Length: 327
View (tube, rainbow, N blue to C red):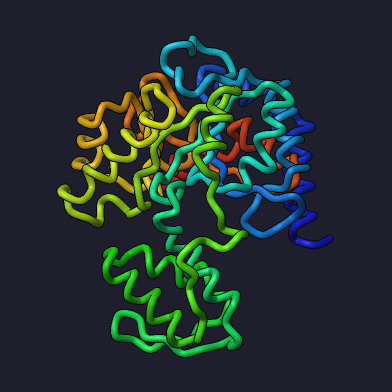
């Protein structure tokens, strides 16, 4: 039996033993905020397929109460709550996920990178992936932080991790250098596979159960830029969405999930009511409303989705932490 099959079998044993149901009841007052990014027609790395998403929505609708996200702390009064959140604003949400949500009358919230929606930019990590995918060379030398590295296409996550630690200026410089070294021209507008939705899509969905929040203007990691640059990213994106939709934008999602005390304060000052990180965990009504947890959801067998929503992984981590602290 392969390692993957062994893991699935173990998870099924836990479910059949009643641990999923037991932990759901134990955490009945906690909200599950689900985090998505990309969607696709079929299986594709980094995307949740239409088929998988449909199964996830059916299960969540059956076992939980899916909450209207822009009224999260107004309407929720306990009891198996789920919030569906989607970051960035890719066109594939409109093409693949929105039809399913509308079919089952399920609400969700999309956190828009407004400069992306306005076609003023496309997302830097997509540029890096595009360069790596289009390059003729599969293996190449590259200088990072004054050290020589040899990268392959499969090293993309490692390369992105390096770039996340850089300032915006350094990162953009390295992206340009990577493009030049590998002889890959970066288009001004995002290629089709990285395309954003447009404001027509946003307005249509806003009339049919989809809420919208802010994810900044250009997707910088906010705790790596100055307050003078960060506040317009936080505030202008809010104003842009409000101008298009004619209604208040009440929530925010930190790019890359990163924040510090200053960014939290700026989000408050901009007039948001709550904000999400990407830290894995449940949401409690007792939590700080400006550093809320989410649960990243991928295109995995449905048994793992059921495990995520049961909170078994959170219980495992709490148990491990307890034993580490009490050795």
